[in-house]
Image (cartoon, rainbow, N blue to C red; front, side, top):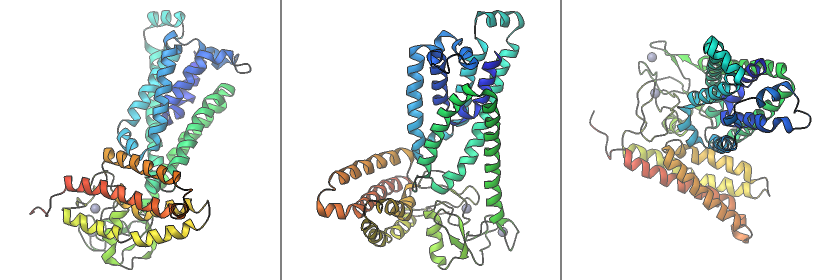
Length: 409
Ligand SMILES: [Zn+2]
Ligand SMILES: [Zn+2]
């Protein structure tokens, strides 16, 4: 009983990170743990092996393995993740609750008798505590990860992939670590949750610190905004827009471009607030400015991105002169420079299809690499095909969503 409670509590951060993977590993240890030579006689394993029959059944293991695989795959896709994010905390605490109920409540006939005499009280209460803790940890995790999403929302520089691998391995190692040293694991779990809390607070402070008061109404305004989000007062010297949408230290040199640069980094063209939806037309959460009021406004923006194509292709060609390793900075460069500006506004389902197309084309290109000229032009061809696929996808979405001319307001 105590071992099960300890296990459920210490694994809270694991369930907040990859609930199905954590549940699968728990069920796996419960079913076969006692057969592992050195670990088999640990208290935790013995406690887990007394979990109810259904939890240790083949079908339960199979279902959890399938869900864990789906979970690992979906964590890699920005579009799928965006859909799942809405349900995130609920799914995670539900999985943690079910596993905790299986481990804590119905350990053996003895416990059931106990429950019958004393009511559901203590046992269910512990499971609810675990579920509640998972909910909090999942919310904290989302807040901490928002920093990474902010920097690399579409995995342009590979940050998302690296993080996804780190999380998968930390869940696998975490479960085994708990079996070996339960109390140390519980302590490390608390440390992990505290770490996430500080990371989130740091990110919020960072953003608040960078704001400057509006000269008219003193509202804190982002330093690379065009106008104050509250009173519309223009900023005298807006700062330049960074590659990741952050304000740079130096002033913006081309104010005519500022609007497009902000949109390309998925920021409101007026107040520089981050736009969160994956849709062509969306109102800024702060100042209610609509990103593209009409198809004409959208086309103006698209032409701006189009005009970056020749230079990007040229840079890609130069990168491809560097054998083998040149492809990595090349891909990062064209993604950040061209593709991000399109991809952020494509609705999730269309975005998934575009992604599959890009994959397909790139595999074709890799297969043709032995052909001399194609090999040399590989990187520019990858750049051009990615650009073309996402441009087409966004064009289609824009035609569906936007009126040809601005509606008379
Ligand atoms: Zn103001
Ligand atoms: Zn705005």
